[in-house]
Image 1 (cartoon, helix red, strand yellow):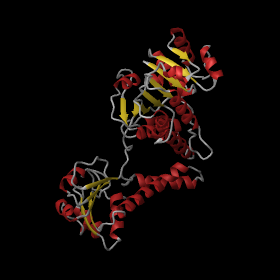
Image 2 (image 1 turned 60 degrees about the horizontal axis):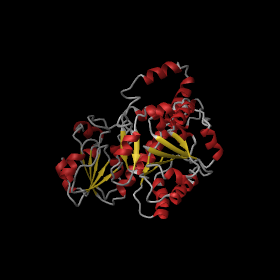
Image 3 (image 1 turned 90 degrees about the horizontal axis):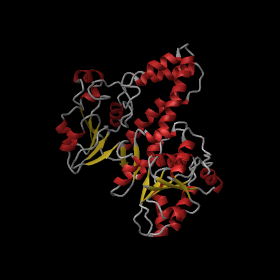
Length: 422
């Protein structure tokens, strides 16, 4: 395939040499002509293992070529990949001027006779940017067959070539329902790498999700072991033991959006961690913020329920998670107790996990709200669902009812209006 690379910074350079290494013909340009001349002479201004070697191999095979004119490149290529910088401004927002400028330059040089099929952006940008940039293109060229795509990059400095060729997944974001098997085969190395196709906003955002999580991991490790140092902990041994658990710790577990945490362990242990941080007069913002963040999520749940302005409310699922009768610090229990403060509310509660005898002793005011599921659904205007009960409720509810989905499950087909927490 013939591919154009616009912008020869870190990402553009790695893309150029790796795509060339895969056997594609790459045409490159950059606004800095002195940089282009360095590349033409086999000198790579980007310091990264294997990149200069692959550059020179591509130059010898003529699979990497450099052009001074965007029009020259567009006359050759099917895929244009924009890799210009998006640095932070003083307000923290990314500077999109380079992306806008190169998009405008491509639009001004484009004609419908050119073979261009895909306009791909790899620069990290906030959701909505690719659609906005494509509108610059369409304002100049009018109706066209070029498909805009966002393709996030997940390259680490120092291992970028390996990360490109052995990517754990490749993401393509496009808003059109369109046949993109040729582009999919290109970026997934003919299906060797896992390929996810989604909308452009989601593709743009997933890069931020990744980087926030990486930053969280670094911050977590530094803070939790900084506290541990105060108690003569063997840090390396503790970390070795922590990392050995790939079932709960280094895994997908707990990494899906849903209810705030509750139960007998996490809230209690985090309170102790906060107390230890204060006792040692440490400034550990992450360790000290998790309970507050969890409380904010609980308040957001209550705010969301109140926005419906309904008084006949059914609560399906009240223990803190599936297959336990434990009500300790359950977010759904707290929500129910808050709703009970409004005397206008008519509440009903159902949960097959509940221990009714225990509920009668510990929360008699809740015990009198228990109803069977069919009765609850029938008399409720708003049904709040947590845990595993979405399918049951969706089948029973009618078109005049609302279902607020606080479970981690997708909504099932229902006559009722379903609103998802996430």
